[in-house]
Length: 511
Image (cartoon, helix red, strand yellow):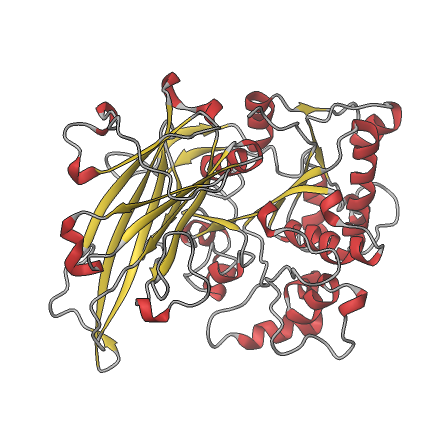
């Protein structure tokens, strides 16, 4: 399997606020996509250490050979060149027309207009590069501009968005709008009624307007069951969820330093501006990282964000893991949660983290709660809990090793309640009922990706010295292009998860 052809990358920035904010945004040649960082949350003393991340713009240039084609301005460059390289980066400068620093009358910002202008840019890039589509990479509100294009503008023109957009990656986009914490609903209503600084675009009424094509639009407003996060798969020209990736931030505290009011209003289970439950499209790929909406520890200017972006756009393997067949001890006063952390060999950061300390554990259910068609190797009626879906790139394997290695850290914790409140009588904070790491090696042969897996508790010595057993796991799925195996949990997990619990690994080609 060779690398997929490179497509132009178009970056769409987030909300700038009032005129002063817009004026500040347009002074940046790359609308913030060139912002890096020097802080990373690692260190033996738990203090932030110096770590220089160059910015996603520069890293795509250095790592993937993308060109930054600016000669006095993007519009000028496009107007004076008949052809451009497909492996190039472009900024959708939709705020320029709304700034009052150019000496001309500023146009009021409207999200639908930004989406229409995005289509014009894409059409120009397709024509001059010969590329069939572009990749859209968006931060915050920029993801809503892209969704307006995908869900409304193109379908209203009778055009299939899949013919224009290759992949769609969002950093901290409020796909479900921006909601405030319990008791602050009056702020939401005030925002939506007044539309101050155009912030009503994050409320359900306006979102319904710019996310719904004419063929499905109800003039009475959104139905009671309408969910702004959903990208419909049954309407005109549905955009495949297989092409959408949502990066979710789980750190509200760093955003609060500069934006205390908004962080306090949306609550702790957020990135400081967007609540976790509003930051993804159901059914799309997701990764959770402990980063804030923006700022020193922001999503866009983070190694975590970039590594997810790079592998989603250019990786050649999709790797999935799910917990199947678990039968947790049933007690009316006990609930169960799972924490997962994903590490890829050679990276100094975790590419995905869902933990209770970061407000994002996975809520576990008993087998009796599962429904629908069971996946391969899952018996009818067995629980199936997705743990992670990620992407790997055989060209990036560390140290010239013969395998792609990643590690899935799984912890299962029980929470006890008494009279509706958490009970701490027999509680040991941060101590899990089950805690182990599955180390997975995937071969680089696309025809037969030999896969091995071993639990850390059964590996002797350093993990860096670990050599997988020559006996590879057996592919349980005879269909071509899909590799499936179920890995038994260590025996110590039996009293917690049951003897039938196992991890289902699935590997498929990507791109």
